[in-house]
Image 1: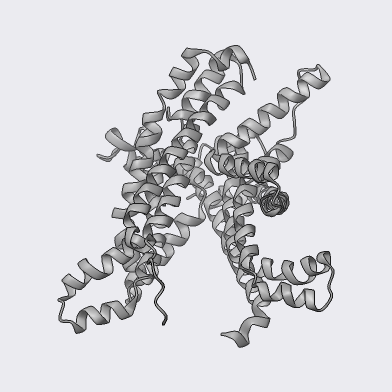
Image 2: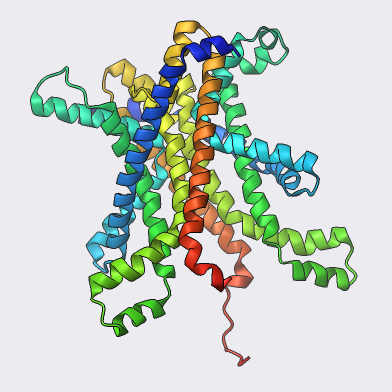
Length: 228
Length: 238
């Protein structure tokens, strides 16, 4: 390990860390939105939406994330070229990476949210009916908090997966941790130090996420303590 | 997408020639998940801190680091250490992208497998173990007839999921030049200057492999759960 070289590239690698966090958070939010839509589609009772969501889930749970990243990037590129008729416009790696990671995450989030929704006790809905809450009120005030409490542990794990998958966006040129490490490794001819440094940064990120996850979970479970 | 490329027999055959490589990588991960995962899970569950803490550390590190980073460390990083380049492992193993990928995936699969096995061990009902011991079964007999069937059943679902995830994870091997499905697709993308169509062919192949794997896992699971699945015909009042 060449510590002086790593320290010299410190700000460079930290910029990568910022990009990694940005792309994972953006992808997680968009992926959560896909998951909510997917869950709504599956539970809607409409046959067309049910089939469409099932197809989405099975396809994106089967395809390697690396492949999805490449396909989104290059099909976006081809699409832009055919619209504008110019060859030199590229789609932003950040947008393509966010969208690709979100597509992959949404397929799992759909399953997680669906099973959480089905776990909400039926009595709660009856109670909110009895209290005269409207459908949307009961959805937002009664179901949603329960769904998120139940879905949070698996969603947190899914976010850890998204964070790791964000390393794949380096192949389309986003300057996230791994890409920055690659550049630094190329410039210094010291790949070992920089890839190890990248690994340490990913581990720190994972540790921070796990800690946050733990805190949020205990916060959301505060009303449930008496039941244990 | 280029239709002519998509319907070309050569393109399909070339990319399909990566299927055995992908399957080999998956089988290596699957084997490591059990054979390295079991001792790791036992160490993780051990009351002895000297066994448990290294296992906890190993599992945290190898589950927390992206496969791609591990692959780059092994393939690009190790090559710069002199004593590794002169060691006996260099020529047969560490020089080759394929074996670096195998090692990287096995190291990760061990960590994931250990978590699956740990969950399965914790799911063994304690009461049945006590009952077996009370009936005079030896420890070995109890492990073989009571604990193991429970644990295998509990592990099968999550282990099947890991298997599917490992099919997807092996695609990263293409980035160090392994000719798996995605590697072959990348080769064609470069040769014919069509960045998209070969990827779609590769996607179809991955999809078929994962669906087949799911089918096999579901069949095995169904078979192992015969007695649980079968519902009694009449309900006895409690």
